[in-house]
Amino acid sequence: MRLLIIEDDMTLANSIGDYLREDFDVDFAYDGEEGLYEAEKDIYDIILLDIMMPEMDGYEVLDTLRKEGISTPVIFMTAKDSVDDKIKGLRLGADDYVVKPFFREELLARIEAVLRRSGRWTDIASIKYKDLTLERKTKRVFLREKEIFLQGKQYDLLEYLLSNKDTILTKEQIFDRIWGFDSETMVSVVEVYISNLRKTLKNYGYTLPIKTVRGLGYMFSLEEANEEEKA
Image 1 (tube, rainbow, N blue to C red):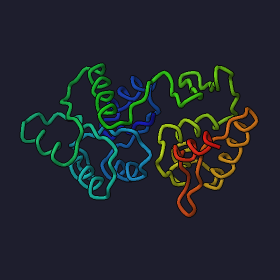
Image 2 (spheres, helix red, strand yellow):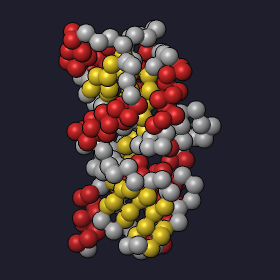
Image 3 (cartoon, rainbow, N blue to C red):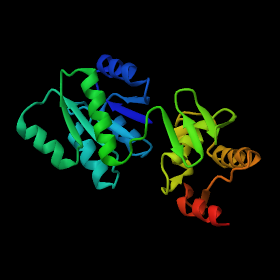
């Protein structure tokens, strides 16, 4: 799962990031404008957002995201501890509000709780879909207990698609999520990897239910999966 920390205190941000890296892929933004730019990519599972920042404060960032229809769960983490501040944050669309200083273990528990409520949470250790099992820590894939060997970023691509079932993911979203927005690779690499992933799994007797949505992107389609079973 991918997490964005928007926090102008680099020492604090890096400390939190180091703690969460065991369970998440962590990205950083160190002011409000940069944070908004990253969050607007809509590739994150959850965002940790400071309030008092240069360029644009956390309230403005969240308000803009919600007005743009971006529903990524957001947890405010801030020194502003008044009831009015908490109410303002929650009414703008925050999913939780953590007051600094806080214990890192508490923050992780709150992240897990928010992800469960939002329906984005999956077992940290593995992702399962019918006969397919992905072990996240080792990046191993099993089909009916037989291991499937995926090359390079094929695993990351499969995990991202499987974690967003019945959701259209644009090529740009997939590219930013898997290769990173600063990669020198071209977006067209997504098509190549989708094709190779389909072929690899087909060699193991498994038809991957990835639907190509013309002009938009790709979707792990449960409807197509059910049709395959009926065929």
